[in-house]
Length: 241
Image (cartoon, rainbow, N blue to C red; front, side):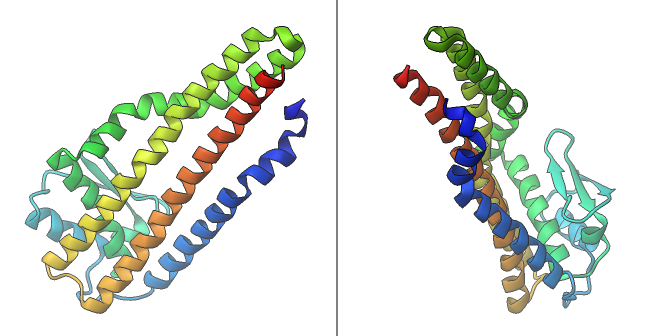
């Protein structure tokens, strides 16, 4: 049975993506720690940066809320709300400028109807369902198939249904890449256009944004490899049957 060796096989199959994910997490945390200790020349907190950019870029309708934690910042396109962590909103650092500008990059995407953001927002529901139940259905299907032997058509059908749900979550991960990369590009442009960063600070901002982008690349790689792994188990077992 292929899934009797699931843990070992899964680890080997996923090892490259797991390694990339661990490196990405280390990279973003270490880069954030470094540039959160570098005071920006304007001596502006993230909240100050937000006010300037929102006023100058026509985003003053966006609400700003404070939330606990570090790197928990995000933009909610449904409520037009930018939520900033204490570390980003209250610190006059290069890291804070990068984080705030990135989230306002999403706000600008929303304002201009950026296609990939709209698509991602449109499939978030089915992607959440796929992420929550896809793997469960695959396991149920594999167990049904193992119990039924060669007559496990029901198990195969359930497993394929789970695979389809997982595909929605994978697609969500993939289209997140252009959304995040574009938001980072907009962040750099806004900071430079408004004269908020020096050339040296712009390099620090880029380091922050590039490190963050790596986490999304790692997440997408994990999602794709996991889907391919389960597909090989499901359809490989079908052929042997």
